[in-house]
Image (cartoon, rainbow, N blue to C red):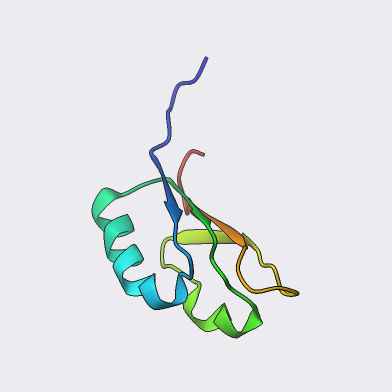
Length: 80
């Protein structure tokens, strides 16, 4: 039995790079414990803007082709 049900949001972004600020504002206003992102279109050149304060980032890029990639942000200090 779950004692805690995390709040979660899922975003299909088709390139997070140009939506990072907007996404961060949305996440902070909602206070979600988990944020799943599909179609990040990230590669190693996006390391500088992928971090979000208060969250641990897990990601799987698709470096050999354009498109694809997933990311999961998990709130730091949460019970998830």
